[in-house]
Image 1: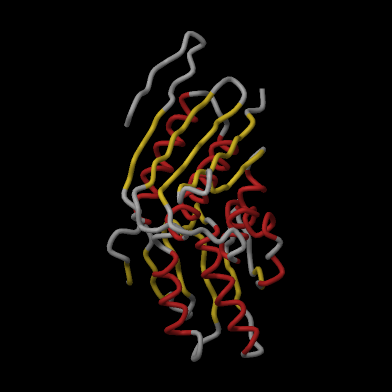
Image 2: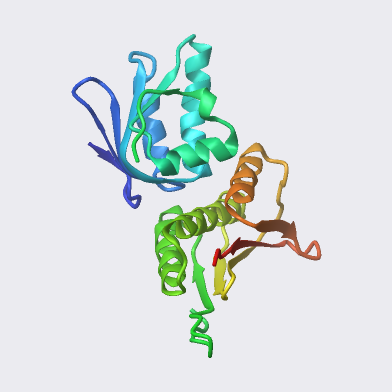
Length: 107
Length: 134
């Protein structure tokens, strides 16, 4: 598990290799998530499990969009799993839903 | 915190908070705003929008600021929740892509918002309003 000192976000790697996020993907937590994505994206398909995420803002979204852009450059994609209404709404507001493969949604 | 109170109509606030430009404090301000909005009768969906707005204001002022303390003020009335943030700043690129994304989120969750330099005095403020649905 990887945690930023003062953020409310923790990240772990699931049994299937997915990036499992717990907490808020905000200005404090976004860099933690980005660091984990960067460490794995060249050797693994990027699947991000958001089941335990109930808050995201534009700084957190930037981490996801950056991963998506890099994945597209590799002819790959970023998959979002268990997308909650908060994340779905931010994707809809910013018109960025199509930048990701949405594997599943909740709520 | 400068002042707070309850008006004759039962509205709680305003609340003013001054914080260092530390991203980890965003959660504290979101909690303060959501608590105040809840006490003023806002719905869960409205409170969600308010917390996003608080976060976006902080992003604008901290990520694009000059490392100075940030002052945030929350005000509620029977129809809206208003938040204002400001910090001293040396320069401010309103066209920065990250700030454009921030503003698009504000536009999505708020009834109105503005981000400006005031009198070109290295001083910025932001104000967003969320309309309360009766």
